[in-house]
Image (tube, rainbow, N blue to C red):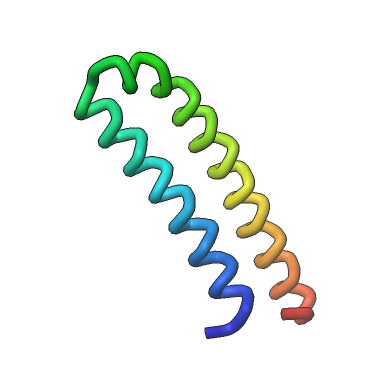
Length: 67
């Protein structure tokens, strides 16, 4: 695997992990869900945006032949 594939896989795994954390929190319910569900959703949105930026940068580097 090249470094760009590792970076891409890591960013996607982070987003999937946060999504799984949120789903498990909502499924479990209770006071933890009430206190933290919005924060987890914000984490997911931020990391999805960062993953999108990573994907776009990697595509741009490949187009120019730098990667």
